[in-house]
Length: 123
Image 1: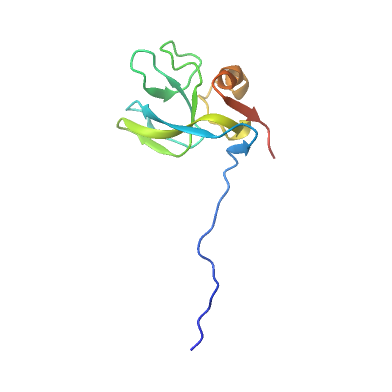
Image 2 (image 1 turned 180 degrees about the horizontal axis):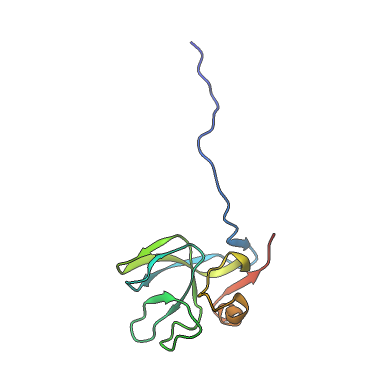
């Protein structure tokens, strides 16, 4: 009886979030505030000053979360408070980041750079 010694074990799908390796890709666990629903990988988070919890970044906010600090490394269900893995530094694809509907990568690029995240355009 012959047995196949090769075959497909799995597959990899590239999401194009990570855009290079010139800047170390560091991750950190961030407590994400409850009540935000499902946040997708690549969502940009700010930190609420009063609670030190992550909130989906929006320039119109005035609680500290208007400053972009982290990028979600995985999808997360923030219906309840949860600790999420976030990028705190690295080269990330500008086009793969998710912002509030009125925000753009350009609006937050300087903040992200100050915090160790450098944006890059990739095809």
